Length: 193
Image (cartoon, rainbow, N blue to C red; front, side, top):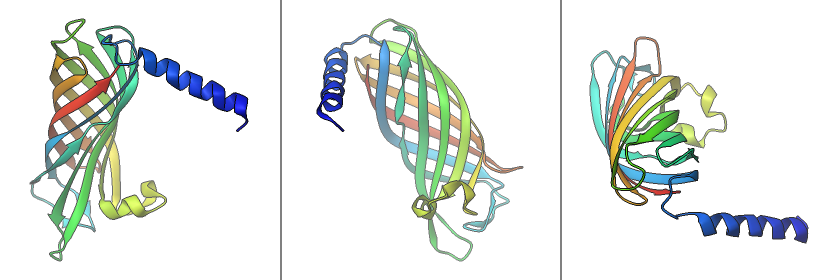
């Protein structure tokens, strides 16, 4: 990279960060949240955990990275993921690390122009269910231990202060025919806009 391109890149980064975190929910948005999550899965047919005819549920760590654009102080569009990670027992008794995730485009509507404000979100995308060893494989989508299908999500939350939100997210994933995963997450997030 020559000096001119590097200088332009640095100027762009500095100029966008000068106007970021100004309290206005407009323009580029970046966020990250963490909290507890609860996954209820039913009918998963998978070698990693064996045949699953009954409902199973697990508590785990949930996250919510977001990147998007706010059109005004009330409406934002995010590309977001709602991963939840936990351990389950396999059919042979070993612990298997599971990642259950909804990857979606989400529309969020804030009721007020500024904090404090309630907000609601809806999204659709892909629902994943895979073991943590898949993360080390170069072609995750083709692994026999990676299931994917429809993913839907809804959320509601409260922004008590600028850049801080609490959110209850409900996700539905259909990683296989006749299988379902419902996930519930309670997240605290930092959002930059």
